[in-house]
Image (tube, rainbow, N blue to C red; front, side, top):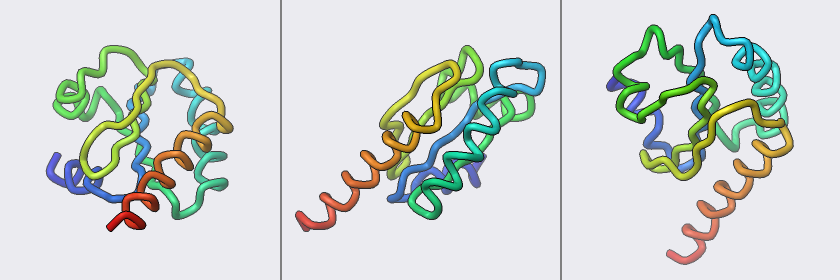
Length: 108
């Protein structure tokens, strides 16, 4: 759990996929996330969390259905949704939150 908390403190977006191995829609989301990773490269980190193996983390973020996707930035959730989402939508969300990071730096 400490490793997870450290990981999401990144100043670049961290997309977390809360999934279960028995979940059909989760199996559909997995290759989409691979596509997202190939499109965003190092602009974001993508992490998969098995809710059956990491129950305390899922409970901490009140994950009640799978798949649930949460984008974290600086340790805080900045976007979340349940269900399957397209690669294009997720790439756009990651870009938007990456640009927020750049704007924050420009203001400093």
